[in-house]
Length: 307
Image (cartoon, rainbow, N blue to C red; front, side, top):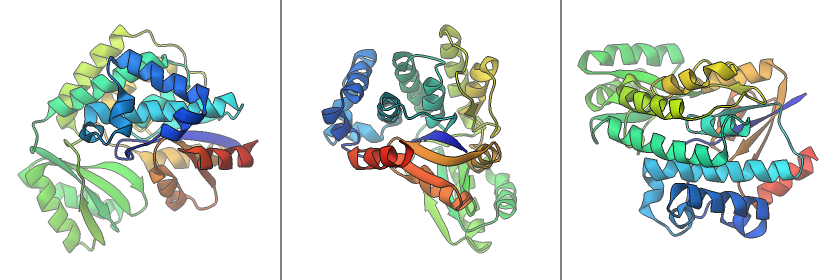
């Protein structure tokens, strides 16, 4: 029986996240303080003082990364470890950092730049994303093909059975939403995001990100990381190329979870704000044990379950 740590992605942020962990645990306090020093501004102020910046991608990403890595270091301080890691989109950077590929300081600076690159890649209003609930994968992929005659639109996040996020150019998204409703979708939810993430429209961000990765010294993976790009474990020599492609490619989350389960994972622990990934995993396979850590109460439950 194996345990996997999975790390939260963008959209899970909320004001005040991580504050009680900072106040109670020295190991968490050290991570948040390191983040402020590495970034050159106070991510803590943005996270805890109801700043509108928390929902701006260039700040959201280092905020969630910091919160997630504080949770990781807290578990590690109690000798609670995992056999493998994965993360949803941004969370993949936490997974790779947890596996020792780069330092926390390098990681938090990198995701701050990633957020800037993603925001600047596509002008505001050109692209959009929408969650489609209650359609079969094949049906929604066909919907996207039909809507593509007015612009780019693809299935961008394969979250769980019956929930897929589409992304692309605004007009094509609007047409796909209507076609999805006509095809029987239960709900169509336009997402409050700054761009069409995980599509080829993010290629400029991909190029800039790769150039940053070339400047960094990357170490070998200490534990397997299952990537959004293929759903499979990656090799240490593939990390730069995987992260280059990941930002402009669909997130194969359901595939990743099924692959980890096939490799013997029976317990998943979500690290970071919210329980979004826990909900996805429950819908993918009800038989696995699912925990999360984002505050003192959830931390105590993880300790009780795994120690």
